Amino acid sequence: MKTISLCTVSIESLKPYLDLMIKSALDKLTNLHEIIICTVDAGTAPERKFKVGNVNIRRISSPYSKDFSHALGLHECIDNSEADYIMFCDPDIIFHTDVDDLYFNLMEKYNINYIGCAHEHFNKQPYGGFPCVVNSLVKKTDLPNVNFLETYLYYNSDLRPNPINYEKLKKATGKYLIPGAIPELVDKFEKVDDPFFDTGCNLYLWSKQQNWRWLSFLAPDIQNYKTTFYRTNFKLKDSIKLKKILYHQCGTRRTEGFEKFQQVYQKLKEEDNEGN
Image 1 (cartoon, rainbow, N blue to C red):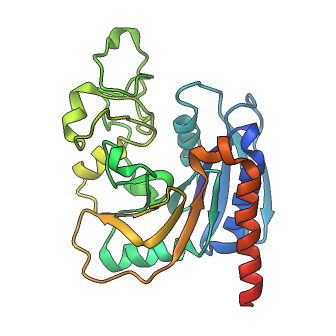
Image 2 (image 1 turned 120 degrees about the vertical axis):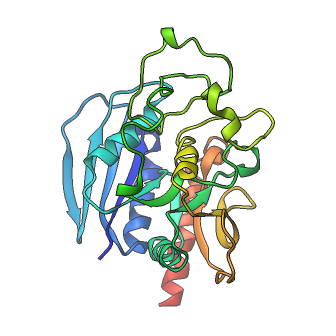
């Protein structure tokens, strides 16, 4: 049986979102071995672990690092994970369906290495419609090795491809998820105006190096991902049955707040109850 370590990074102010995301994951996902939550603004704390049904909930911590907390928190989750597959997941997500089964079925049918959701503004990203760490699934052993981009990985907080003085930067060997542009490798990404190299962008380079097949779903309204809208790097011969996948509140947290997120979750619960 394939098992998943769901990996998410959170801060104290996102706890209400995180709590509902976890409830949603436990309700909808059927292949979870564990949910690992890395908190990055609470200092160093001992791991806390408990169980809900057959799923382990593990709370770990990582030191706060202004520009790199998200990436380093995900690396901490990966390093502590026990399952065969890693699901990257933002804390402000609500699952509409058994996303893991959907992903696994498509991975098997089309020999896909990496599947998930594209950035909400995918057409403005240097990695285009490639799946991003908002929500995506990959086999753990398929992830980059410690030597990937060894010459280029530095803690560079500039997300734009400006010249770098490497002598002033600290090396980030093995931390391939960190954000920051690598000017020497920009031409290996897609050409977009004002490219922005955020957390996880370098997986795009690894996918090209390893000849990954990938598929991503899109959210035309920025928040609601559905199977009808997708991108791939291979020809998909069949249509995918229409399904709502997940809701991602993303940047609108600041304007719409937790109340909107809670409403989406409550509506989904009501729909589930009506369907039973």
